[in-house]
Length: 166
Image (cartoon, rainbow, N blue to C red; front, side, top):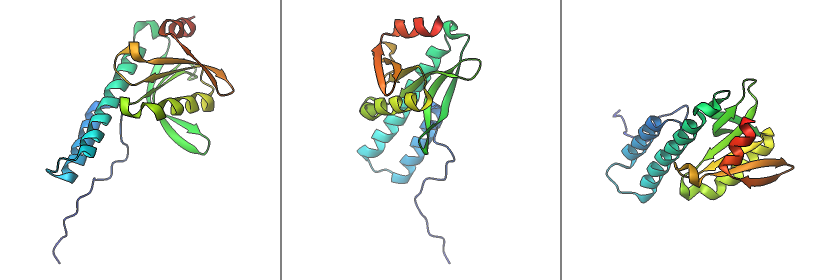
């Protein structure tokens, strides 16, 4: 019996936003499925994945600055929110592995749902600070302080750093 050719994306055990190389290979796999068709949906997916990967890299680079030397960053950190498990893009931890800040990285198109997700992460883990990044430019990031009980205050980057580094 002749083998039937099917178009499918091979099983990938983990889609990795934290790696731009992995994001590129994921986008290439999607492109193979659609062949030469020029699908705006496919190009949006490809652009968003690469864009989010670059944003996550910018946040991780920010956390690797010498002023954060007493902390370490974890990429794609698993977080439990109710019965569901999620992966936060970048988490800043202290030496005792306590979460200090959670960063949610989104392409500009997905930014509305990203802020809600970040706040869910902050509540579920009782993490004191959060960053919502929808650009590689740190000046456009939104910094939050978790006031507990599902209340948040937007703060400046300088206040974020001052509070964490005190």
